[in-house]
Length: 91
Image 1 (tube, rainbow, N blue to C red):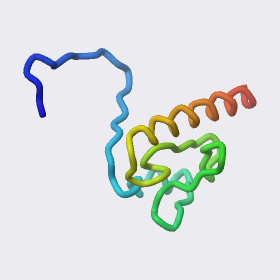
Image 2: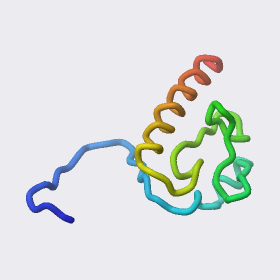
Image 3: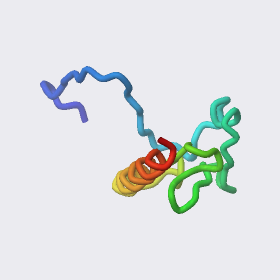
């Protein structure tokens, strides 16, 4: 429910929306990158959260399908650590 007076604005360069859908949209970006999907239509990733496209990572609903937000937060943190490790090797 909306709470009157709770509005606020943040100045950002990029905002990513995390919305609970069945799987990631199968748009041109995923196809152009050659990202493989699992049998349920989610992005297939390894234990390091990297997809079949080197340097492309996934977490949360795009990886597991609609699930709990706390699970998405955990995956996001783990994926961020994996991205950091990956970038350390390609610098």
